[in-house]
Length: 228
Image (cartoon, rainbow, N blue to C red; front, side):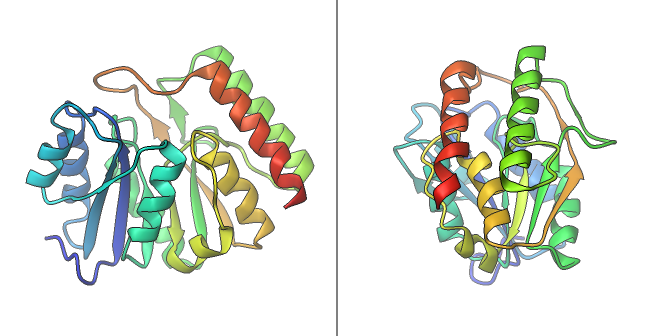
């Protein structure tokens, strides 16, 4: 049952025309978190389909944004009331059953937990070779520059302690947000852990990621944060 006044877990889901996916995504979250106090925040970029109506019918709180995924996550995290905040995609690529792992990591004392498709037990049904190579190159670059040991970088299934989010001072508007989180978590001295995560293919619709343009944004994010 949703407890919007005193949630323990907040699940933040950015959306744009995910009407065919969002109902199953929310239902999956509710099934897994049925014994938790939780809230679901759908941060919508003014969808023209049934994304909002379906989300409302399932008890989600709706927040609107008009800039991009990064802005949506930052706005959702700021609005979240839970002690643990989780970011999750709406396209059914993230498995709800992994939510308890993300929660347990924060309960165990970590400030932020990041799903990784490249740890043993993780994987992806939706990563062509050129994207896999690009992600690997970005991971190596971030690890070299920021003295980290990440195995994945551009993946959005994560949990964070409420107070830890405030220490990162995130600013990315678009798809650089995951990279910025990885970098600023390290720079803020947060206690970080990665856990295996398996990415499924998008169920319906077309993905919003544009490999070349968003790859440039990620690269720009890596270098922009060197002096911050």
